[in-house]
Image (cartoon, rainbow, N blue to C red; front, side, top):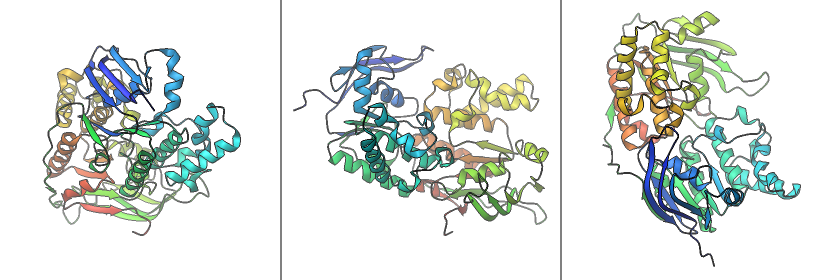
Length: 453
């Protein structure tokens, strides 16, 4: 009979090196075998809690124990991490191998297990997440959602007593989210303790109970309406793809196959489809980051058939990546958002006006945030900062890859309202999404990249 709580926080406070307090006098307990959902607004410290549980961090004050072991004691780290399977918000933060089977095998091999048992665990974990067919695939060719499944499989292969999921379904399509929910329910039934950080109602409903880190009122749930674009008959489309085919390697199966589409100037398009269907790849063609293997991409009446044209497209199409930290690089939030306007030749007064306006648009308080290192922000705040950097460019086209992933209810509502407002003012919006809630944007052009579309 187990005598210790699976997780015990006792009067825990935590601050990063910047001195900005993240947690203050937090106490809670998770019992062995419980499935607990951890919720709260962006920046409330949810991911910090996950890192404390996995002994990646130690509290500034108070005590964190995992199955009775104090995370602040270095001699306990190996035992804690062996019993705790951790899946981060961004799978790229924990993927270390080139091939899928090597990635899933990484943990069991480090436990010193026999080769046969390692193979058995890898096969079992990949079956559990529905990725058996990707056993020999290169991790770098997978979509964000597929990588997330690989990360979950890697945690499961350790056969942990405790599974910590930090927004682990935020990049998955609805079908894959349902598969993971079913898996979590099964693991919980087998006695594994689960701490699940999530904003998604489908996942939260799985929990035995909910721990809410900060007060968060429900955001309005009404639908939005997008007005039809007002275009002249002779006006070229904002974006046009003509028989576009693209493969990442010669001879590989095309990610995009003879794709033709047109998005009018001032339009609002939602791009949907399963994980691995080419949604992010398509956005990178619009921004000139990728060049079609065959076919043509046109932006505002100009074909991207040269390096010069593709470079020029980046001043017309503002692209926010699926993982915001990939486009954050400066030492302060202010300088990161200011980078684009400065490169456009704006004066410092104009730069500050744009930075302040962009931060206000996405709900980042200027005085509290502008001096902070962007990498010290929460995942949701990083997403807001990355989108603010794109908004500050004031491009005629915005291409956003899963912009609502990782945002709390208020953040999602505010961002969708902002996009509708920008669209009403004439900005063309292209948004990749797999979340059915985004379909409340009535009147959008729906582009499906599903194989049978």
